[in-house]
Image 1: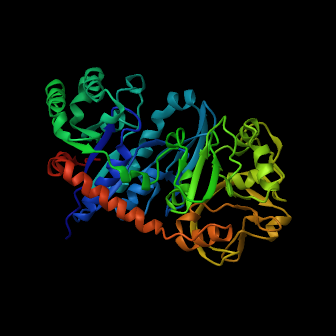
Image 2: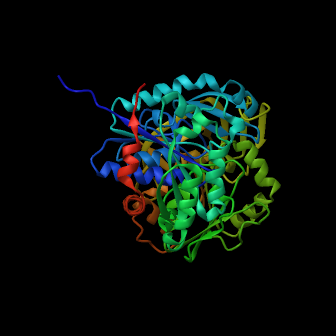
Image 3: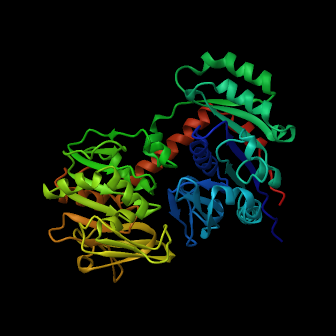
Length: 493
C-alpha cells in the first residue's frame, strides 16, 4: 500500500502591487523543483488581460503560466481559478477555472464574490493531491482592509485554506519599512498572525547597509526577515504580468530595424512582443497615448485587445489611424495580432452586443476581411506553418469572433489543413489569430529578414530557461531558503 503524498504550502503577499511577488514565486518554483520537489504555482484570483491557454483548454494569468514553466510542468486552469479580464474602466470578464462565467461590474463582482471561494478551494485541493509544495501568490496587498470582507485573493483565501504567509516589500519604491510595519498595524490580529516573516525585495547596493532597517522592522513587527533580495536586472528577459509594465515603456534595444506598437487601453497578451524586445537588431517602441506613431518605423504591430471595438475607437481618437495610413502608403509593413487583426479589416460586426451596443463598426480597411463577434471563445494551443516562410509556429489562440473575406485566400499560416489569418496583395499587411508566434526562433528570424531586418541570433526559449535558472540561484544566495521551506505548512483541505 502506497503512502499518500503530503503537500505543504506557503503564500507570498505584498505590501502593494508590483513589488515582485510573481517574480519571487517563479524563482522559488524553479529553485525547489530543482531540489527534487514536485512544485505547483497557485494564485486564487488574478486580474490581467495577459492570459495563457492551458493544457486543459482554459485560460489563466500569464504569470502563473510562467511559474508553471519554472516548476517544469504544464499550466492547468487550477493554477489560477479566478481570472478577471478588464473590459471597461468599471467592469471585467470573470473567468472561473479557465472558462468565462460572467461579465460583471466591479460593484457586482465584489458584492457576490464569495460564491467563487468553493471553486478556488476545489482547484487548490486538486493541485495539492499531486504536489509536494504549492507556492501561492496573493494579489495587490492584504493591507487593503476595505476589501477584506469576502476577500478571495489574500487573507480571505489564507484563512479559508489555513495557509502561512510571507510578506514582500519593495525597497526600490521607497517607504519599505513603513509599508511593512504599517501592514502589521492595520491588519486584523488573526490575519497578522498568519504572517510568518518578510522579504525585502529589489535592493540596490550593499544589503548590509540596510541591516539597521531590517532590525527595526523585525522589532516593530515581530516577524523574522527571510532575506534582502538584490535587484535582479535580468527580470526584463521574462514576461511582465500585466499592462502596468507598459505604461512607462518607451524604446527597447538599439537595432536598426524599428518596430512600433501603439499601447491600446485594453491591450492583451502583450508578451507576444517579448522576443522582439530582446532581438539585438531590433528597436521596439511602445507608443504611449498622446504620441504619434514614429515615421521611421519599419513595421507597425497592432497588438491584441480585450475589447477590440473600444480599442479601435481609442486608436482613432489618438489619430493613430492617420499615422498608420501614412506608414502604409510609404511602403511600411503592418501586422495585426488577434484583436489587432480584426481591426485591420473593413468591418467588425457585433450583432449580440458582446462588446457594447449591438451593431457594426468600420475597421481600418487595410485588409479585405470582415469579423463577426460570436459568444463562444476560441481557446486552443496550436502548431502551425507560416505560409510565406515555411517555418513551424507554436502558439495559442484566445479570441471571440470569426474573420472572413477575400484576403483570407492568402492565409498567414496553416494550422493543419485550416487557414489562419490573412495577407493583403503584396504581403505588406498581415493578420493572424496566433499568439506567441515570435517565440519560435526560426519563424521570427525569417519574418524579420523578409521585411529587411538583419538576421538575429537570439535563442528566446533558451534565454527564458537560463533566466529562470539565474533567478533561482539569485534567490538562493539572498534568502534563508531552509527557514522559508520550514515555514510551509501541510495542506489540510
